[in-house]
Image (cartoon, rainbow, N blue to C red; front, side, top):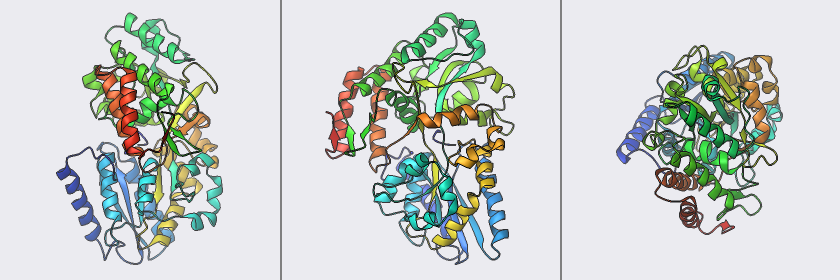
Length: 462
């Protein structure tokens, strides 16, 4: 799953011994098959993130099908799939460890686009400009998607295979009991909070609103919660794109924290002990929404995958039970809607033994038919214009057209090497206002102090 749930030199969440065990397992997986990292000159070794949800094997099945297709079209060539089942931070740490040595480096690695900056700076990835410039399919990718895989040097370091967007999911039955409209479209933060307060007053026992928060949920809280608010306060509120400096002291930052503080201070959200649980996203998708325990969820475009025939929480009637609305900007100011997008990309490690064969496999993954297939089975939002217009894609899941339409209002996280550390500092600020340990202004000041250290003084606005 994208973005979501679901980010090194990053902030690993697991104990050191757990991370080391993942790294050792990775090394064993790579060295146990064939010679060196390639498994032989005619083998492309592909490392990807396997979902920690054992009921979710959509990607595994898709890649197995792509492996068969590639090997049939390229006699004598082989694909070795190496799944890594680990939380996001541990997956990132593990793949970085692999890429440090030619002996263990894969030929192709699945990268969360917001981590590209760190891996580029560390010298782990190979630029792909010469390859994509000769590849006719590259012209079909949306420019925003291309931007998400460019480094600070302007070069291309990956091929995105999908993205996601975020909005508001709401329970129509709960809304009916609260006297709220089935075609609800909040026009501002105030209208969103008013709806949550109405649910609290009229439908006791139901959580009015979930906004992910705190350190443990990671990017689910920072990107999917806080930044969905922050980017609705004004232009470029986190990073100045002209100077490439991080923004401190912004009114929007404090206002976004105040929104989070309000949700939890007024008991409009889950109990803080539940909100700060690293597994809260699973509870939202498999328990709270299907069982009518949550009225409004600020969440992702992929949610329907959980409730599909092959999902972990099959729910045949979900498309009629839930409504969807765009997240409004703070006061309803233009453009009126806001979304955040993440996504993953296929990158070639700098020390890959078979970079040409690796890119040939990318070309197989990204034929129009295969790209459409992946967007359907993986609940991805298309990054190719031809896939976005494909009837099969548009009919693949209720709401896919709605979430695809949010791409025009979306933002991507700054793909800079220090972003994971910035994200950690934001998560800490969110947690402090969630628990009541700090006011929004106090948490913002503490964030600014940390940011100056993280960014080595490359800040503006403070």
